[in-house]
Length: 243
Image (cartoon, rainbow, N blue to C red; front, top):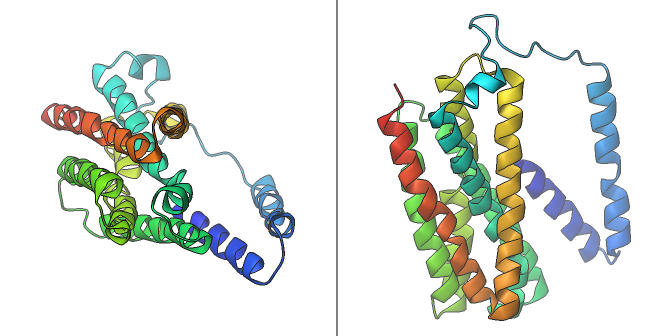
């Protein structure tokens, strides 16, 4: 996801720098879903669950308290990621006073920070995933508050970019620990998790905008810190009952 964001932002920036408009940028990006269509058209759907584990019906998994907490956690993880990502360019321009190109570049750097965070997490599998996410939540709260209220615009923008790194582990690692807990959950379980994550990713940008309309974007983005703050105790609860 974040690598795709880097490619899309870079391509759009190059097109705009070359003197073409947004229409041209969109037309150049239009073939991407066509490529996906062709690539997926010849693939066979995998089995709903692995042969190595007994299939766990979704109805049964949904009755598990641990899984319901995981759904709440990934909702908040999606909210943490996209609350900042969706508003960062506008915040950099309208609230921090940077030019338009800096706003676009800030989103690119945010996405690169997210790429770096996810790559690093992939190479340190021995660390406790719950503690990694807990630290990510705590540092995300600090980054959100710094980005919202630091008096020096450049430092505030840097804190916003750092939030891409600190929050990068939340969504994929929640998927991973849930898969470890329910190895027979299959595609339906991941579909429900993804749906809740996307719901959080839609809700928080709306909430930030709603609050910004009634105050300003500083306050709107500060409210985004509520998502990782609420996710932290859920992760600790899940860790205590992971066996």
